[in-house]
Image (cartoon, rainbow, N blue to C red; front, top):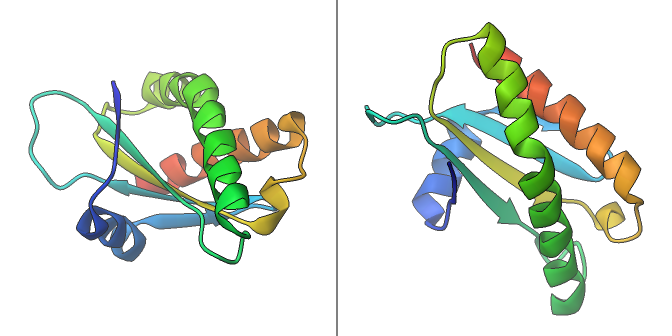
Length: 123
């Protein structure tokens, strides 16, 4: 189950404790959740600062990131959990300006590479 990170404190926790993978169109941060939960849960947050552009471009960037994550994150988690024990993870995706004009294939390749790279460095 994937839920959203919405609180600033959670975003800051991931940025301070997490592993960073910088790609062409975004930066992916990944960290273990500190809570001792009985269920394995994954949370994800999206950030697009004013460097990306005005509100229209920031919202477009977040929409692109959401569709990317909704389609690819379950596959990446499944691949990761085949080799490692199931852990609760937090992800934050920070959009770069180039995400607006990039094609979907390059976004998918970057996300797949970044997600598996970050998750393998956490364990």
